[in-house]
Length: 207
Image (spheres, rainbow, N blue to C red):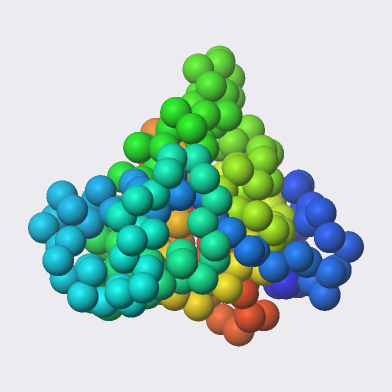
């Protein structure tokens, strides 16, 4: 967990009282994997993807049921297979944005309903970030830190997938697609540096 800098404040705290008590993520929504697979298919990369996916996971991935929970180990195989495609970080980010757009009616429904209101800002979406996380992952935790009037740092804990660059880049893209509903332009960048295992953070700013 990053220490707070000068002028920073926690606006959405962790549910756990300390990192040691964070419950690790055990499952992920199939909706995320389905949307990711569609983006891979549209790029003509399906055959290459399955060559990197363990054969004993093929049937599970090919028969995903919408809205179901997928064991974290299956999700790890999926994200490692996409990582092996060696897409550029910008393309990984783009896929994440496409995933965010495709799941707007389900996992991101809260954000999109909020976006229809007047006077809302990215802070409104970040305020319900824990709810979005809970709809996406079983277990794990997060917190949102206000770093400036239009700048936030979002820290995620207890997600083993955080060790996979593609997962982090795609998640940034998905968050950017959601926050982009509330401002003219948004920037979401990974916070680099030493972090506890299973954690990752990104900094979001907007105009």
